Length: 447
Ligand code: GUN
Ligand code: FE
Image 1 (cartoon, protein in one colour):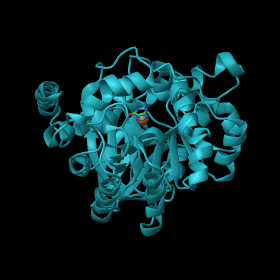
Image 2: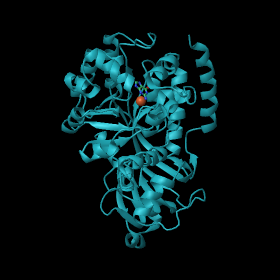
Image 3: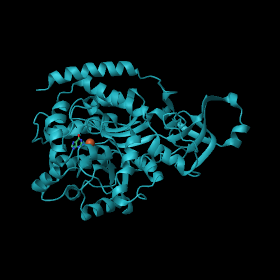
Image 4: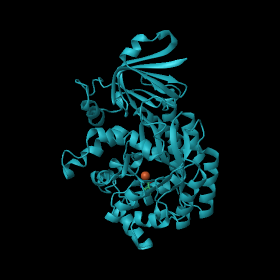
């Protein structure tokens, strides 16, 4: 039976932009039709499985273009440090201590938080080992993700977290062959050489070359996040991050680079001319003291910018509402209050993310023919009620006022994952309980 979701309003990210008193007709995993108030008067309700959400507005699910599910267990365990110490003293030893179970629960816990806060698609960077467990968690929860194991064939900070170049490349290819475009297309692979400092040139180059063999695959890395990292890159490569990556031939329209905070004019041009994508992570950039990326300038240059929470230990949330709010707030004292209009921020969190991932033909908007990744928000929740809800107000309400408390239901690929504030198949209590147990064991394994 076709599903019909009745809502107060839809933000479509398409034309018309807002539709009031509307219905979304779902067939299998696709949006078949958007019905307006007049259409709804004419249809025979008995033909459809009706989901009444007339107190809610429907938005396209949030798309986060930089996440580390493998780090979710480590929230709160790496505070008040800058990037290179944070990695060396905390994150690398913690990641190296993962086993299959701990990384699986780390991913499940992260997905639980992401769904509850309205995210339906991510670009995820894993760790060196046990990556199949992350894929298992994504598949089981009906989540949508590009994911890839972190490729690390150099580690001068913590030698236990790395592998020989050939095995990083071989295991990446094997995972891509097995999982790229699997689970109804919800799981896609994205080779993820972690950053210049953890990768040989060959690792970077072969990771990007692999894209030629897999349609729709992406290249995912970190670049130009921290001044200490910049200095170390300059020392080794005699160039800045993006310049060097471009020199290696790995900056393309299929490349998503997290952070890009400290770009030179030349690097901004490279990003623009190559049509590469920046995953802006405002919370993480503030918390690690990394800096404030000049996003208004990047946008003016026409560079693709989307949003990501990064990992739980550098944020410490995975919640897109926080990223949208900060993406706006941090720029205003520098560039003035007109910088970062709310509608643009909302688009960065949805359709621009879909474009960055090359899947804007599938998700990122609510229109006929797209996959049904839909979030229902109840903006009348008394935690922060929006009283006059029209036009621009609705975007500002979502960007600056809303929180996970407003998320009522989440549909991914035509299936309810979270429905009227309850998970359909994730057992939250059990995920939490087992995550705690696995973290305790993991801490004992750190050497
Ligand atoms: N650079 C290399 N690895 C990481 C990571 O795990 N998190 C962040 N924020 N930056 C990185
Ligand atoms: Fe990151």
